[in-house]
Amino acid sequence: MGCNYSSKQHAFSLCFVNDRFVRVYDFDLANDSVSDFVGKFVKVQGYYYYGFEQSEINPSTNSLSNLDHAFWVSTIDSKTVLIDVFFEKELEALNRKKVVLMGKIDTFSKGHMGMYTATLDSTFFIEEKP
Image (tube, rainbow, N blue to C red; front, side, top):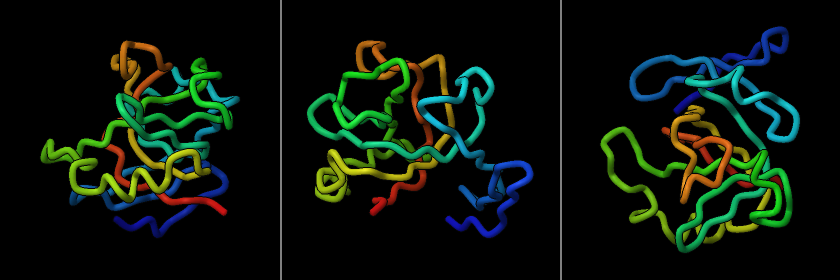
Protein backbone atom coordinates (compact mmCIF):
# COMPACT_ATOMS: atom_id res chain seq x y z
CA MET A 1 0.00 0.00 0.00
CA GLY A 2 1.26 3.41 -0.86
CA CYS A 3 -0.47 6.76 -0.75
CA ASN A 4 1.82 9.14 -2.52
CA TYR A 5 -0.40 11.92 -3.77
CA SER A 6 -2.50 14.22 -1.70
CA SER A 7 -4.78 17.02 -2.81
CA LYS A 8 -6.04 19.44 -0.19
CA GLN A 9 -8.29 21.01 -2.77
CA HIS A 10 -10.22 17.76 -3.29
CA ALA A 11 -9.56 16.19 0.15
CA PHE A 12 -8.37 12.86 -1.19
CA SER A 13 -5.20 10.85 -1.54
CA LEU A 14 -4.31 8.55 -4.41
CA CYS A 15 -3.39 5.13 -3.00
CA PHE A 16 -2.18 1.93 -4.61
CA VAL A 17 -4.46 -0.86 -3.31
CA ASN A 18 -4.73 -4.41 -4.65
CA ASP A 19 -2.76 -3.65 -7.82
CA ARG A 20 -4.67 -0.47 -8.71
CA PHE A 21 -4.88 3.17 -7.77
CA VAL A 22 -7.92 4.38 -5.83
CA ARG A 23 -8.96 7.75 -4.46
CA VAL A 24 -9.18 7.76 -0.69
CA TYR A 25 -11.29 10.64 0.64
CA ASP A 26 -10.99 12.20 4.09
CA PHE A 27 -14.09 11.35 6.14
CA ASP A 28 -15.11 12.89 9.47
CA LEU A 29 -17.09 10.30 11.48
CA ALA A 30 -18.87 12.92 13.54
CA ASN A 31 -19.82 15.35 10.77
CA ASP A 32 -19.77 13.91 7.23
CA SER A 33 -22.79 12.27 5.62
CA VAL A 34 -22.28 8.58 4.87
CA SER A 35 -24.58 8.78 1.85
CA ASP A 36 -22.08 11.06 0.08
CA PHE A 37 -19.36 8.39 0.30
CA VAL A 38 -21.12 5.08 -0.41
CA GLY A 39 -18.81 2.77 -2.33
CA LYS A 40 -15.85 5.12 -1.96
CA PHE A 41 -12.59 4.52 -0.14
CA VAL A 42 -12.19 6.80 2.88
CA LYS A 43 -9.69 7.65 5.58
CA VAL A 44 -11.31 7.91 9.02
CA GLN A 45 -9.96 8.80 12.43
CA GLY A 46 -11.49 7.63 15.67
CA TYR A 47 -11.26 5.12 18.48
CA TYR A 48 -10.91 1.47 17.50
CA TYR A 49 -12.67 -1.18 19.54
CA TYR A 50 -11.74 -4.81 19.03
CA GLY A 51 -12.92 -7.90 20.86
CA PHE A 52 -15.43 -10.73 20.81
CA GLU A 53 -18.03 -9.86 18.14
CA GLN A 54 -16.68 -6.32 17.99
CA SER A 55 -14.57 -4.47 15.46
CA GLU A 56 -15.61 -0.83 15.23
CA ILE A 57 -14.32 2.67 14.74
CA ASN A 58 -16.16 5.28 16.74
CA PRO A 59 -15.66 9.03 17.23
CA SER A 60 -16.42 8.50 20.92
CA THR A 61 -14.06 7.27 23.62
CA ASN A 62 -16.95 5.13 24.89
CA SER A 63 -17.68 2.09 22.72
CA LEU A 64 -21.31 1.51 21.74
CA SER A 65 -22.29 5.00 22.95
CA ASN A 66 -22.41 6.76 19.58
CA LEU A 67 -23.39 4.13 17.02
CA ASP A 68 -25.10 6.71 14.79
CA HIS A 69 -21.59 7.75 13.78
CA ALA A 70 -19.69 4.47 14.21
CA PHE A 71 -18.63 1.98 11.53
CA TRP A 72 -18.18 -1.74 11.77
CA VAL A 73 -14.67 -2.55 10.53
CA SER A 74 -14.36 -5.49 8.18
CA THR A 75 -11.02 -7.21 8.62
CA ILE A 76 -11.34 -9.41 5.54
CA ASP A 77 -8.80 -8.90 2.79
CA SER A 78 -9.25 -9.28 -0.96
CA LYS A 79 -8.61 -13.03 -0.78
CA THR A 80 -11.30 -13.41 1.92
CA VAL A 81 -8.73 -14.47 4.49
CA LEU A 82 -9.65 -13.28 7.95
CA ILE A 83 -6.92 -10.81 8.80
CA ASP A 84 -7.73 -10.97 12.51
CA VAL A 85 -6.75 -14.67 12.52
CA PHE A 86 -3.20 -13.67 11.58
CA PHE A 87 -2.99 -10.28 13.33
CA GLU A 88 -5.16 -10.79 16.40
CA LYS A 89 -2.48 -9.63 18.86
CA GLU A 90 -1.82 -6.47 16.83
CA LEU A 91 -5.54 -5.65 16.64
CA GLU A 92 -5.98 -6.35 20.36
CA ALA A 93 -3.11 -3.93 21.07
CA LEU A 94 -5.05 -1.20 19.23
CA ASN A 95 -8.23 -1.75 21.26
CA ARG A 96 -9.51 1.56 22.71
CA LYS A 97 -6.77 3.53 20.96
CA LYS A 98 -7.09 6.45 18.57
CA VAL A 99 -6.37 5.23 15.04
CA VAL A 100 -6.56 6.09 11.37
CA LEU A 101 -8.22 3.49 9.12
CA MET A 102 -8.68 3.32 5.36
CA GLY A 103 -11.33 1.25 3.65
CA LYS A 104 -14.49 1.39 1.53
CA ILE A 105 -17.87 2.50 2.88
CA ASP A 106 -20.60 -0.12 2.51
CA THR A 107 -24.05 0.97 3.76
CA PHE A 108 -25.71 -2.32 2.84
CA SER A 109 -23.77 -4.07 5.56
CA LYS A 110 -24.35 -2.62 9.02
CA GLY A 111 -21.97 -4.83 11.00
CA HIS A 112 -22.71 -7.10 13.92
CA MET A 113 -26.48 -7.37 14.45
CA GLY A 114 -27.01 -4.43 12.07
CA MET A 115 -26.16 -1.93 14.81
CA TYR A 116 -23.79 0.36 12.89
CA THR A 117 -24.25 3.16 10.36
CA ALA A 118 -22.16 1.29 7.80
CA THR A 119 -19.25 -1.09 7.38
CA LEU A 120 -15.75 0.04 6.57
CA ASP A 121 -15.10 -2.78 4.10
CA SER A 122 -11.87 -3.80 2.39
CA THR A 123 -9.91 -2.15 5.18
CA PHE A 124 -6.32 -1.96 4.02
CA PHE A 125 -4.66 0.43 6.49
CA ILE A 126 -4.70 0.88 10.25
CA GLU A 127 -2.32 3.02 12.28
CA GLU A 128 -2.33 4.24 15.85
CA LYS A 129 -2.42 8.01 16.31
CA PRO A 130 -0.51 9.67 19.16
